[in-house]
Length: 321
Image (cartoon, rainbow, N blue to C red; front, top):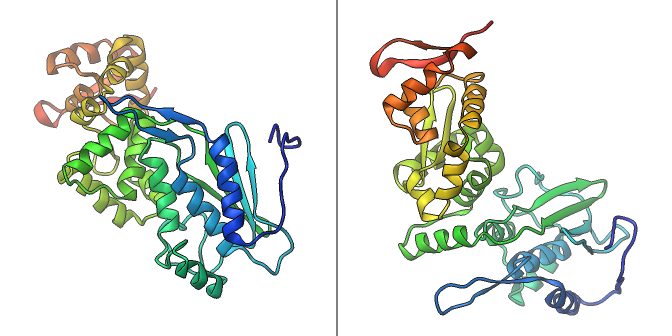
């Protein structure tokens, strides 16, 4: 696709599913950009769209489409994304908001059985999880599902691999640290947004608040991948500094947190508009020591920043005008 209305190549016909898959794979092999990562003497290659994600997405579209509705499984290949649509709505209570963990529900059970015998699909609802994992493990954007009219639409964003993040996950696997899809979703989000709260984690992981609290607690206390800050009511999580070091993001972290004093002031004031901050939290944000934080926060007094209590129970707040 050149744009939403123009295309440079059109190919479409009816064929049995294995043949259709072969033809799409043959096309994508020539159009799926490859990135080579240098790792010592090895130079592994990574496709722009992981082959596992493409395979599972296409098979899901063929298996779950509604064959009573006129139309076809359609793949539109844009410069910055792939859009896969198939006729038929979600069934069995599945929606874009719960598709990751919802129990499987097959519209075409006989077709699913046949493809299962051919070892093309499985009946354990692993397809969506595999799509997520194959993208997230490379630091790429997660898939996007939508229901439009009588069609289901899946979008894969053309995001490039983050080599340091991929090596970081591999290092965890080599140490027998099990990282599941929920962990990857949270880590991937932190890679782009610096911090996450329980509510946001619940939404992107498609889990209940209680379930995601357990996940975040496990990542903090057992896996040592994240650390918490804020108050009980306004708790948030960030990468530990050790994790930043492991994924070689220290330079970016320092630039984001320390390099420009004015930007630090703006960020601190922005957070204080939403919640209070302790000396410890500001040290974590800025890399300053305790006394540097005290001097720094004194500079913000003219902006309305005040301190309450003394000692370890003290905290900074923004006085309302």
